[in-house]
Image: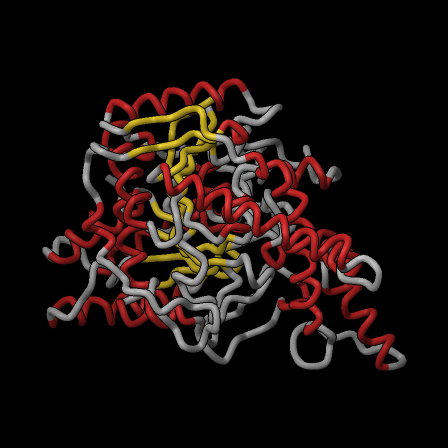
Length: 484
């Protein structure tokens, strides 16, 4: 096996037994980046020198017996998480040359665990997109078919993990940005409960929806990463002070006694036949593993989630992106006056999708429309949350497709924002409700990956990992790698 195709737990065993050094492993991954990057353009910045230095330090820790399961294992960090002394661009011209003076909490904690960072992952600009076509620097294609999208906004990290440019990655998820690209690239993507992982140092898109999570080659790796990034952070006012379990203890290979529900609203009109076929086969496998499955679950307010999301998220984005005014940091245009400079900075620094969402948010929050749009969207959000809470009184988890379609063609939806927004219809409600969601590889339709999404009540990450692990052990879909 090529070293770059290892999982975290496989790499850890080799490092622990000293069959492989972190420097050797890191050089193998960097060589893979050099081979594949021309085709996939998954990284905004490659940090070769830093990675090799961190790998040497990791080897010293391993020799001293002071190491963790993540020590010396190469990773990619999505380019909207601050990395001290390393460019953090959000794939935007606005922050093209921004170098943060501090690390995001998750990066800081991973460094404590022995992080080797090989690069920063490409993304939709400011995490606004479902296809990775909105990066200011490059479109990242899907490694299973280079004419198709990898999903977004964490498309770069997803592709990096899928092709071996990293053993694992961190992504962020505001409306499906970890899970949808994970589903499209045949890897595992995990969005934890809102508040479970610190957002300090994550460049804000929509503050009440954003959450950081792992993107990995299998479920066991997601559990390992969660052990190091979950926990209370006093620097994040939304961080929840709740005990962190050892997530690896939830990796049980059967589902005996678990009650699973399948909400009919997620088998939406326009869903591709192949995706539905894969999902029905996957759910039958969950029953074989001992779970009780109920197909008669209804979450009627799901149909309003898309509309509510595209009022709440742009409103918060508009407020968060007001700081990019050409004065404090980032891109700055020298205009004839202060107002001209600010206008031209935002005109030239932001791409079209970011501008579209700023305009939507400004409209939703404007005088006379706040009650009609934003306030109503927040009321719908409450109804969606209650509906999920009621469902979790009866079921341990809910099972849905991650996306209603396989990856679509590059350029197919870029001029039709509504069609693009509809591609996240299965993932958006989860962010609105603040609950955890896990996407695992479930099979292929027309030769392209299909993801299965597992949803649970707040702080039920262990249950989701158990279901994902048991399914994965029986099916092994995630072991397939694209040929790049």
